[in-house]
Image (cartoon, rainbow, N blue to C red; front, side, top):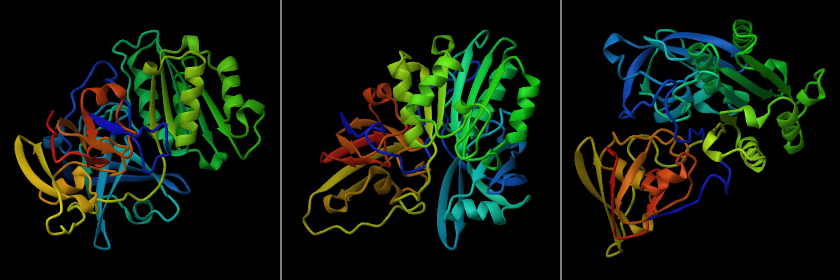
Length: 391
């Protein structure tokens, strides 16, 4: 049993990747998250503060980097002696030998600033194998209507999803509502226009600008509840939609989820992914923050299984550390990316004991019921806890 604080109750801290789903064209099993060093093939400007980075995937790693439209990868670099990991959505539909992410510079963001100014073709960078479940559950897309609502860099996975859906079926439809402050902030502006030209009858594209006046009042200003409800009456009729994809900051995603639910949309048909900024907390780097045990204080005995091998570590009660941090102290290859409870890379099955999760933006209720936890947010509440990363 776990005591979970869900994403409905507090804002996100990190880039988030969430909600259980399947592949475009059929489910695909999860594979073990591993880093490999890839070479940068291209760096393409998208806006004044965003770039698209493409990596070359060698033939011998083709299987490791097969992915679904909507998934993400984690990037790992060491800057000024500190290991940094950031998670970014793949912005192109699956293509052999290449994968691309879009990186938007955050104010004061060390990683994003470095990527914007210092990353060049030929540079090596550690890239984790693709993860995530922000993709369609529909195996047959013929005649289906999918809708995406995105803000800012939240367009990234929806670029891949919209393209893949429209390419895969000649009768599928995709509606995209994309909100930004101004036209100069719109990522993939030309790519979206090209996609509209390719599928004029099947792609409905609505740009909403919060700080620029557009001809249609409905497409000007921030998206609030009243504007969203009007969109659902005028632009998108929920009864015609088979799946919804929401990607952006917490407030917008929550507004859309609540409003859609209120107008009768089944939450099982709503996928969401959060894009917010912030520096990850502990663990730092790949070692886990050190802890100091007080003599004779109680400890929690943690056992975890990874790649078929089990290991044991004791966590002092005074350390208040997560299972992930404790595991990293003795095994640095334990998988994680954001350390903020949002990407799901550190997911494991709770075999024995109880934990308290401080944040959860990556696991659906049914996953929690089956005993899955986010180890980066799970604090033991019993004397012994056993988790399995391999399930």
